[in-house]
View 1 (cartoon, rainbow, N blue to C red):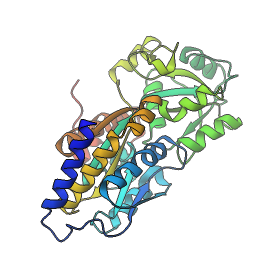
View 2 (view 1 turned 120 degrees about the vertical axis):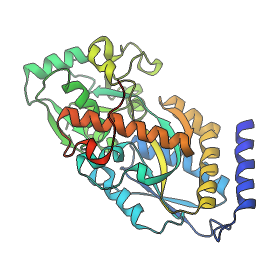
View 3 (view 1 turned 90 degrees about the vertical axis):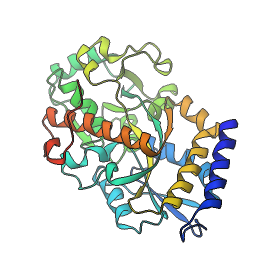
View 4 (view 1 turned 180 degrees about the horizontal axis):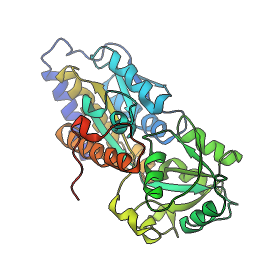
Length: 334
């Protein structure tokens, strides 16, 4: 409660001390563009936190799902809008690989991080009756049945592509990848039998796991997780993963560069309050997400490091179109 009161006090101070023509912000509805489809982890996080942030801001934030291009369509749309705080991007980690993948000229380092809200842990899920219960068994089955295992994908640069790049750096597999506009539609496809396995954030799948609609076969982390009881960290089955982990998706709100400082401060303070709301905290913790709730230089440093690690990972895996060196992205320290 103390943190919430501090956040509200900061928001009030920001409102009182704004010096630009935007001091009355917001005077109209704010558009929140969610770069993935309904029902997925990004959609869940944003629709959970935003009502609390809007209440703290004293405005109305209308959310819209805009899919396509591994999230690049949504980012491009927001970047084309006026830098006035009335159009925000609500996204996940994908843009940090756009440049090396050739998907776009901008990433989050070219935007203002309003607030990085939460992080997730990747897992592999399969149908309840799948003939494998661990990653070792899954790999053995895929090796014995080349091309027959259908794996859901959210496109290059997404969680699925990064996690599969980690896996294929350890073992050569012939998998059939089926694209979807977000992990929500992919998980629905898994339940319907259209795909066999899906790499996804724990938080996006946990309710389906609890309901028995799918099972966890792999935990992409370095330690056990209470929400994935009985599943060992993948480093116990494939020690080579240790060089990449911990790694996981993140979720944040971003504005175009040039947005007035006082507007940015108001939005940052409002989403800080939203991320501290007990209902949001309980939902995130119950679904296996960890709350980060950072902005400013701390968020910028996080984004820079994440871009470095992920860009070099996809480049080393052989499916980047450009070297990170072309964009001045340093290789992460060993």
